[in-house]
Amino acid sequence: MKLRILLVDDATFIRDLIKRTLRKFLPACEIVEASDGRKAQAILNKQTVDLILSDWEMPGLSGEELLIWVRAEEKLATIPFIMVSSLGAKTHIVRAVELGVSDYLSKPFTSEELMQKVHKALVRAGHMKPAQQSNAQNAGVFSSLEIFSGRGESSVSGSAEALLSPGVVSQGDAKPARGASRMKGTGLIRFADQQLKCMIKSIDNDEMSVIARRTPQLPTVFERLQVDLSAGNDIGGLLGGLGAYVHSIAAAEKKPDAEFLTLVIRFDTADAHTRDKLSQFLTASQED
Image (cartoon, rainbow, N blue to C red; front, side):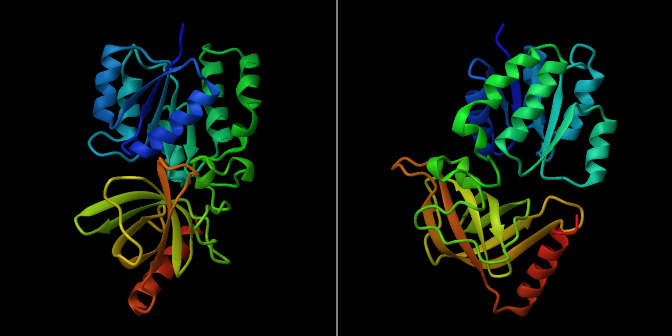
């Protein structure tokens, strides 16, 4: 019987990236998607799944609330549940364990880390034999690609997953500044009446490099922005309303229909208040 995995995350491009990895390693699996906990509940009330991969922070019903509900439902209680979150503090991990999570995966993570967690959960649940893991672990060049951060191979740098690596520089992209932090976190870029969600590749006091999904409305080079940052921990927390502008923008894949973009955003460091707040935020984000 085909494996069915429920993927729950409010960020479409993150779901797409995880789906790519799952389909590379588990081509026969069926992936069911939900953009929040409420929609996940509706799916689970109608069909069975073999594994749940859920983000923690979502509007409506959070991953934590979804986990509590799943463990309280007799017919669902034994389903393996992997929490995927940028909330990597020990308090959050302990909380998830107390609620009965099967495993916890902190963003950013590599494709290997994701699949190790998935395979372990499926083996424990009896849905996969340990020997079957070898196919995914030996999946060739894709196994070294990284979904959210890390070092990708230059031979496959055209892949969106590889280009989420802070160490990889796409054509037309600026190199990360010396001493740039590989902070786990996300950003929200606001311009005109639009907003763009992104994953942070690297960041320092002057600029950040991010990956974002290509959309019909995009900022242009030199366009003024407002940037909100989330470090995904208890100390750094959130930092909003930073003034910035687009320094460069480039396709993250070497094809005309590239789905992802690499943007370099420069902060308004001439403003002492902005400079101080950003410095404090970056320092705090490294303390967790």
